[in-house]
Each structure stands twice: as structure tokens, then as C-alpha cells.
Length: 406
Image 1 (cartoon, one colour):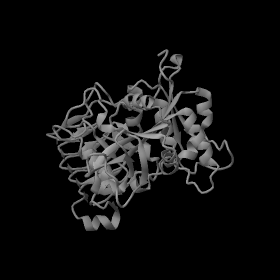
Image 2 (cartoon, rainbow, N blue to C red):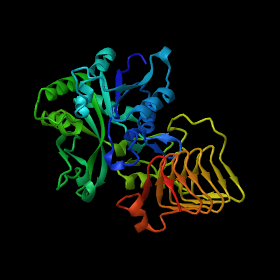
Image 3 (tube, rainbow, N blue to C red):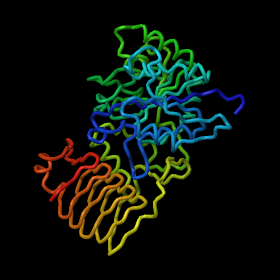
Image 4 (cartoon, rainbow, N blue to C red):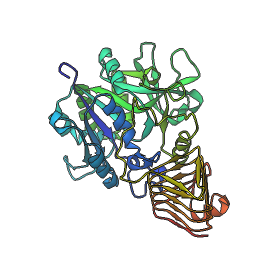
């Protein structure tokens, strides 16, 4: 709209996601499927597009083919209106090297900024599950007049040592930015709560450019946004915190308002799925006032035959449950669960086949896993440890195309 500040969105999607292995053995972390229909990157892109930001660059690097293809085929905006969501692979514009950190990824891609000439740049992470209206954060950022605004979510101080932590004064100006501190700071007025960084930032363009150039010239830097760029601007007294609690998303319920999950581990990924399947879910996928957008495959509706059933579950299109029982699970598209099988508390990604009489409990099965007739997963966890990946929380995880025999 004429007169509105120009905002360019840069989504950092080059993460390797080692803690999600084997789900990231063949794909980038933001490309990992989630909630039956989606990939993780769909959440940040939906938030930005729903907020009216339609010039978005997704910086990719690690095993990015499926991520690049998903963005190119799914996220098509109006070219005639100058709108785009485009994947940007590492291009070695500054020499024969790949990205050495998230700040270096933006520094090597500054041609995107020079071409667009935005007033502000929203730099968001690509692998969190949440709803947010970024325009409210941008508005606060502009009002503050400071160089950067960092989105902060309130977490119990006892758990904050696992995050980048924000220490701020009563005005919202950040006084310290601490990476995984042993003694986390508390928010003003509440000694039991800490602001944890959500990995979402809004910059005045000229401030970000100056910081990136200074960082690139520093041989001792790790070239990381949270580890180097933000502390630099905090030291210059040029950073503010945005309280995620203040964000109001249309259609949100009291139960799912303020939901945010970092699904960086197998247990966090599993738990986030379990948040979806209750009658009144902790995170509501069915909020059409702020939809999570994606492209769905051209498949017929799910079918339940021979008394097959699914309770407290999400079931994707093209799936057939025949004479089997599915409970408290997320079942993606094109899955087959055959006669007598039992699936409980599990996450099945597209193309999984569960044979007759098989049992699957507390498991994550990646694409095209085949569980043979009579085979069992999650029944004898010690036996499973010898054959499969088992998370710290006891979730059994099988990678793409694995075969499970009786």
C-alpha cells in the first residue's frame, strides 16, 4: 500500500537440524513434514504472508532440494503485483565458500536487499511451530526508533538456560543478550520468568547493513545473528524486545493463544504433534481466520473400511484405514493401515504402510516406511534400541524408506 513502510522478509532456512536426525538425513530441517499436511517452513511463511508481507526470500543451504521444490511449487504469489516467495541457495557471491553462519548467509545475499531497497528487514527463523502477526512487531519496532527489535517469549526462568535470553529494562530496551546463561535474567517485575529469543528480528535496513559489514570484517566472529549481530546492537543501546504475549492473532482461542514450539529435537517434534490431536488442541490447526497455508496433494479423501477407526487423531487425504485402530496419532497423506493393525500415539509421514496385525506405539515413521505384517514397534523398547533411533524420551524413530520385519 502506498505510504506504508517497505518491508523485506528474509527467512533463514539453511539449518542442518542434526538433533532431528534421521528425519534430516535427507532433507533440510525446515523441509521436515509436520501435522499431516505441512512442512515446518509453512508456519513462518504463513505468518508473514497473512500479515501482508509479500516479498520474501528464503535462504537455503543444507540438503535443500525438497525445500526449494516445496517453496517453488507451493508458494506462488502474484507476479503482476510484484509479490514473491523465492528460495535463495548459497551462491558463493563473495568467494568459493558456503555460509559460515546465519549473519554470513544474509551478508552473502545482500544483493536481495540492494535490489528491493526496503525500509525495514524482517529476519525470521524457518523451523518453529506458531502463529504470529509480524505486522504488530514491525509497528512497535518503527515506533521505538531503534535499530533492531527482537521477539521474546516468556518462559519459566528455571528453563531459560536452554535459550538465548533477553535482559531488558522497563521501557523494553535490551540491556543484555545472553546465549544459554547459567543464571538467566528475569523480565521486569517478574522474577520467575525470562524473555527467551524466538529467533525473529526486525531491523532498520541501514542498521543491519552496517552491522553485517562490521561483523564480516571481524575474524573472531562466528557470524551468527543471535550470537554476534544482536549483541553488537545491544552494546550500542540500539535494541528493543517485543513481547510475544502482546501479539493478537485473529481467531486465536485462550487455549492456543501464545503457542510457540521450537521443534529442534525428536522429543519436541513428537510432543508438538501430540499437542494437535486432543478435542480442544493446544495448537489449533483449524483457525481459518489465520490459516496455515500449504499445497495439498491431489488425493481422494481418507477412507475407513472394515470397521477401521481413528480417534483423537488427524488423518490425511488418500489414507485408508482398513479394519485397524488408530488412536492419538497424526497420520499423513497416502498412508495404509491394514486389518488388525494398531497405531497409538504415533506420527506417520506420507506413504507409510502398516501391515496386517502390526503394532506401532510412540513412534515417528518417516516417508515410505513399511511395517510388515505382524511386526511391532514400541512394544519392546530395548529391542527397538538395538535396531532403530530412540529419543531421550523413548520415542522410536525410523528414517525414510525403512523396512520393519516381524
